[in-house]
Image (cartoon, rainbow, N blue to C red):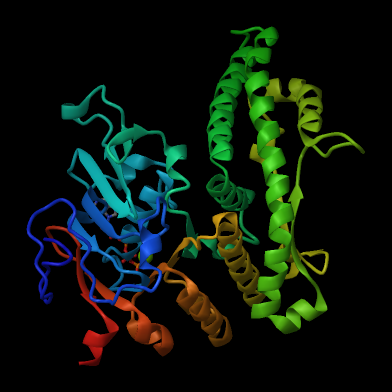
Length: 425
Ligand SMILES: Nc1ncnc2c1ncn2[C@@H]1O[C@H](COP(=O)(O)OP(=O)(O)OP(=O)(O)O)[C@@H](O)[C@H]1O
Ligand SMILES: [Mg+2]
């Protein structure tokens, strides 16, 4: 079953893996720009055995795509498949194997964005047919690539329900938000992040071995070097990013909450566990703190300082929002951060990113919703999920292409598209 040959649709596309772009919308005035590499526009998507989808083939036009359906139908799963193409991993789990459809050995997502065809295939660990094979395979235009190489192709901002805790939840939520944004601005950052994670894991194993007297303390130097080098690169880029985010964040906040912004500016501050001394570069401060804490680290069997333990603090008028913000103020801060992400990625190369909004409208008051709708309308493409279309702003529904996700025993179905013109008939 494909999206375009699903019941209720007039278009049939046959059994090809990727359907040609079929859209009921007229071409956008800037349609020529879509042919450029990394267009941030998803023209087509194919899914085989990922989450609840057995088979899905869909072609998308530009503009807002509304994806609606009942709870547990597969709306978030659809966005997750898109995120997999954009980032090489899911936005809601770090365990790739969870994405493979239950009972299947191989899950595969393929998408076209401008001239690029991106494919991510995931193998279920331990599947007999694939023993010994790599668990994840990424290809761009048929050429095997590593995940960081994907990051500039479809720059994507995701706003998902998990992020309602961004301001007050655990530091890892904020670090992840920062890392995702930084990695999409710089593939070097994405590579350094992977190097850092590997060095950290090895160093932690070694610390435990030293504690158990199965390794000597001298061996730490082997992992200190890559940890410090990649850590310094991460810190530098994080500071740069936070410098760059200051203006867009304050502007977005002033737009969506002018009264609140009048009383105090919204900022994000980097909170490091290796604060530099006056004139000391952040990387040098990290090295100094790492040697100062070595004894404690061996005792704990874990690396206690470094970018993996740092945090971001959202502040309003210089006060830590986590300490006093109402739910409304938290949501405003998070929405402002998301809008700042859109601006930063647009500034990066002049191309607005793809926006994926997972059922977040219900979290916002009418004024903030209206603002978000205006921003969506300015973007080349956005995917917006909801359980009920009635919840969505009529202005958005009027210009959007609508898709329905239907649960079914043989796999979820994406039914559509219905263009605004069709709905009017
Ligand atoms: N690996 C998997 N294999 C098969 N089905 C899966 C797998 N992972 C999740 N699912 C199915 O996907 C369903 C959830 O889909 P999803 O999260 O996309 O729902 P949703 O439409 O976003 O719902 P909601 O409106 O509640 O957010 C689960 O009920 C589960 O049955
Ligand atoms: Mg969902």
